[in-house]
Amino acid sequence: MGQSLTPPARIGLVGCGAISGQYLTTLARTAGLELVAVADLDRSRAEQVARARPGIRDLPVDDLLTDPDVDIVLNLTTPAAHADIALRAIAAGKDVYGEKPLAATTAQGRAMLSAAASAGVRVGCAPDTVLGTGTQTARRAIDDGLIGAPVAATATMVTAGHERWHPDPDFYYQPGGGPLLDMGPYYVSCLVTLLGPVTAVIAAGSRTRDVRTIGSGPRAGERIPVAVDSHVTGVLTHAGGVLSTLVMSFDAVATRAAHVEVHGELGSLVVPDPNRFDGVVQVRGLSDPDWRPVPGSAGYRGAGRGIGLADLAATAPGREPRAGGTFAYHVLDVLESMLTSVATGGAVPVRSRTERPAAVPLSDG
Image (cartoon, rainbow, N blue to C red; front, top):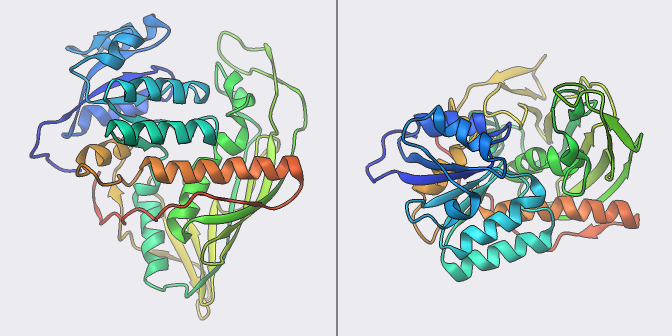
């Protein structure tokens, strides 16, 4: 995000698991952020991170959350712990930026946002991949009328399950996990960024089996229970009338479908993988013989996980960051409403609202 003219925000990282490595890379190269402390329930993991980075302290979780040298708590814990860590950090007067989803439930998410408003602190949340050149270039193409008025969109994620590669995949198959709450935030955040908030959903879900077998690491061969639907399909109605079809699955092998497509009256747009920051946007208009690339025109170039944290740190007090809590809460509300629809078999209104975050001009991440 370029050189900062103000002192860097001091970051305390909680949760030194698999995803932390990507954040640590971004923290090390971003002028506006300074990692000062790390913590993990498994103290040895925090010690390992601190040893590799001179000057970084490893602390017990409680100590990090109240440390006066920490400005923003980066919450990389498992989804079930997101709300607890965030509420404790907010109570200590800290801004919070967390991994997705915002919380395991909308009730927890509301409590977080209410506490933050009362304390006068800010909440941000992944995924921040929508701030990269892929989704942002697609957004600009839509806003500039390249495909005319949007009519429909599709979003598809198909994989055989994270237990094949993750050494501790248990939480993916417990409440707060599953393909919808694990991968759905990337796709729904992309759809809302492109097409605006969602007003209603209808969905159905299934699961192929009640146990999964870990495929790698020290627990390889261990069987773990499945307590959530591992395949969910739904239709989202956006405020402007666009209909998005969402398929999220841990039950199938592969797909040739585009990650995201947006169809308009004058053309169709292929949007890159919303789990990544970059990628080539493609368009095909009424007179085009084939798909053609759209030059990158917006978004943070070369961004990595944590660019949303940098965006939060650079956002003026009193303003909502692009990867902000209100946006993340709406995404969570959409996903939870889909699960409610799965359970009830009917359409479910989405009560929350959000504005599309400010577009990101083409700039360095």
